[in-house]
Amino acid sequence: MRPLHLCINIFSGFIYEQQITMLLLRRTVQAGKHGRSFSASQTLLSERKGLVLGVFEKEGEEGGLYLTEAAAGFDQTLSGKLSELLKISGPTLKQGKSRIFYGIHKDFPCVAVVGLGKTTAGVCGSENWDTSKENIRQAMSAGCRLLQDLEVKHVEVDGCGDAQSAAEGAGLGLFQYDQLKSKKKNKVTTQLHGSADSADWQKGVTYAEGQNLARMLMEAPANHITPTAFANIIEEKLAPHAERVTIHKRSQAWIEQQQMGAFLSVSRGSEEPPVFLELHYNGSPDSKQAPLLLVGKGITFDSGGISLKPSPSMDEMRADMGGAATVCASIVTAAALKLPVNIIGLAPLCENMPSGKATKPGDVVVAKNGKTIQVDNTDAEGRLVLADALCYGHTFNPRAIVNVATLTGAIDVALGSAATGVFTNSDWLWEQLQKASVMTGDRVWRMPLFQHYTRQVTDCQLADLNNVGKYSRSGGACTAAAFLREFVTAPHWAHLDIAGVMSNKDEVPYLRKGMSGRPTRTLVEFAAGLVHKG
Ligand code: BES
Ligand code: ZN
Ligand code: ZN
Image 1 (tube, rainbow, N blue to C red):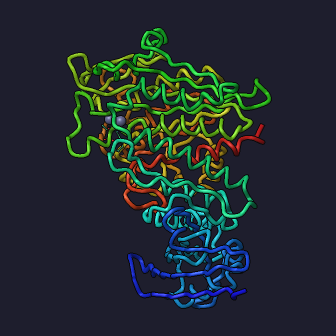
Image 2: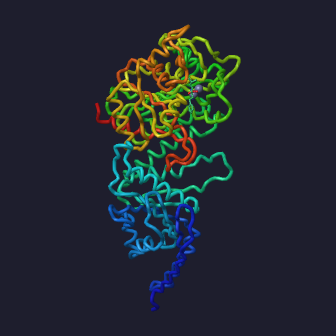
Image 3: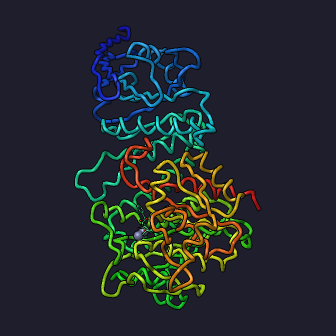
């Protein structure tokens, strides 16, 4: 019998973006005692299977590495080859930096190793997020994308001791809206490496899928996602959960019957019929439990109406239904997770277009609660559709109301894309939202609801309220919130202005450029946090 003959050639030094050293190992294993033979090159071509592993930086030791449990296990099967290669292939992997090794394992032709930063990171008081979770999301996203670019078809992912965050990073990082392109990105399937933590992994997959649903709805063009199409897609997504879900796609006739004059004043300029989407998720074993009410602004395209927006970047206003998208996606996610809570979702869906029928600046309209509104700027339409939805929402006696809207450019000026602006009359609700966002890394920041701003919308020439603040641009996000408050009587209400976080350039490293789907995961985590709160 001939002995097993192993011949390894290592060619290193091919440096490729972000200090990725590629090591090419050519391995020939000749027939062993059972006559089996393994050709790495064959495996490379046919299976395209990859593995993403994490490594921590050792505390207080410059250049020291600390392998995750999965990476250490993998290293052991290779008799320490991985840690040896990590040492000789370049400087210590800092947080977010990566390196690929080829042909070191017969099952995984490509292995990406990514830096996770320090083990002690944890919740950071000044950043208002859990840095360890963010590092895992970022690292697993980066590793998966590297392998996707190498046309790897299936990737196993290191749980990194927090399989939910690892799955979120992988799922969010790989998402790309390329449905309408002829040339699509390589589709990659993922699975947890090893079997421990599979429940957490599945939870992370579901959270990421929720946010990706919102991203898809927001990114898709407005001629595809009309109010009717939006409602149909959500209905389809909820179909597998029909047992616990009721859907109403309310027509224009119903909206008229409800006397939603503010909503109708926005939809009037468009040829597309409005839809008032109403979702009931009955997850609580106590069917009488007061529901959480989520309300999302659903302007499927905001041209500004007669107060027409300038052309540059107007295309982005296809995502002006981001509130409706994140609210509906979080209800789909809550249903998939079978969260034991009751949630009602409302989405007033329409286009804001100029036409001979459109509302004109100075027109006065009447909201569902009888309040009159002077519409001085038809581009401040979000607050009009939300006003009627909020009035209607109160009829369900909700335990809390959270409305979500790409409401003002001013919130982007104030906070940029760092955090969603939250205006709330409830310290309790603020705490719940803030706690959820620390976990998800999709942050919130509290904004004021002073009477100072209320006076600027109630001091109105012709009506009870003006739809713009009297000092127009100053404090625009705050006057918009003050306007909404005029339609709220509930003690626990929060308005989330998401215009600043609507899209991503490169600020969130685990989201590609495009519409962000933020803050879907925070809404889901918030709803999950209400489970044991009565
Ligand atoms: N949909 C916009 C707000 C927006 C701006 C969302 C940028 C996402 C990115 C909203 O309807 C709007 O146009 N608001 C006006 C209000 C103003 C006329 C008082 C704004 O923010 O300029
Ligand atoms: Zn507008
Ligand atoms: Zn708008």
